[in-house]
Length: 85
Image 1 (cartoon, rainbow, N blue to C red):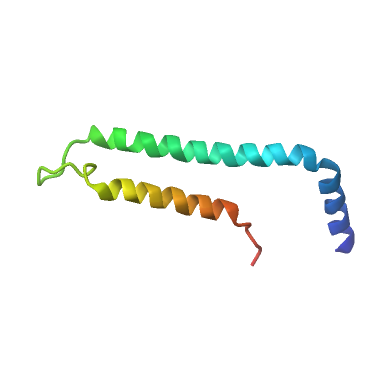
Image 2: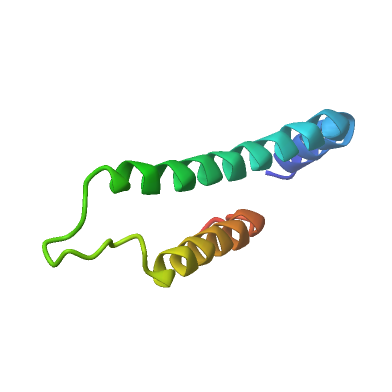
């Protein structure tokens, strides 16, 4: 098992300069996708109309707060490494 870790560590030492941009692009792409999806969903839901009580469900301030919470939780989870159980 120790040889396997040595081999992986050697690969990381040799190729870390190529790995850093790939990891950064992966993070940027994930956040960009979350922002795009988060901005398209309200537009799609607006076309559905209003609720049966005649109120616009997207007009409440809680919608914006919920979006900020979701983006914040996603950012925190993206920064934590996944550890094997």
